[in-house]
Length: 256
Image (cartoon, rainbow, N blue to C red; front, top):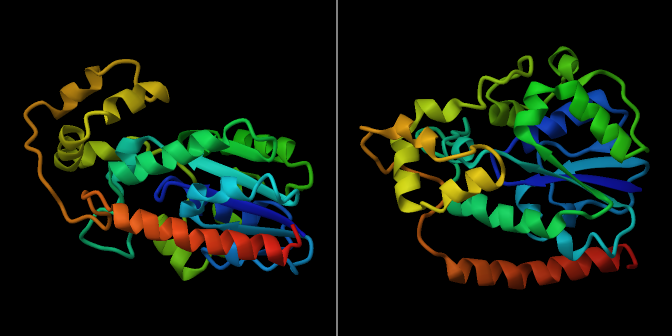
């Protein structure tokens, strides 16, 4: 079995990419919305597609041991990520800057691996067919059935995926600058985490800090958020301990 797994910071386009791939490539099996790679059965036949954004934090521990594991990692403008609202969590933002940063640090550990492809959300929605070609060239075992640009015409996405996507529609670029409608939220996050400015330039989302003029006169406001702005060291330590067991069981199930 070939495992093709999609990871990335939550709200970075992982659901959109996974649904596009399940629809537009010839895939033998796929998960229902989300499934961690640590629960994917090694007994599936053919190409199995799965997605779990936060697996980006742990997949580097198994990618070198499992020659049948292939990964696509997504990255997105942090302004868009921290200003994104999930329909399944109405009335609150889904992520904050620390969540994006933790995923970005994990992404850096994956860079350059021959079985890992890094994609930008912005490229996916502006040049979907070019991105599909890039995926097909990287992973030669994939066969194209439909162009990514026609995804909305063939998709049969489940309810949870449709909710995460905010509805099925033609891929477009309207959400790239979606943060402009959430300036009080963004002003609060930039004020709290000024290092975000350097990340925007590091990943070429901005050449300078001139864009912050759009926040002049905006009153920063703290909104409900699914992620906490407090440091949660105990939570992270508990996760590390728990995932040691998951990694061990994953490798044992595959005789690695």
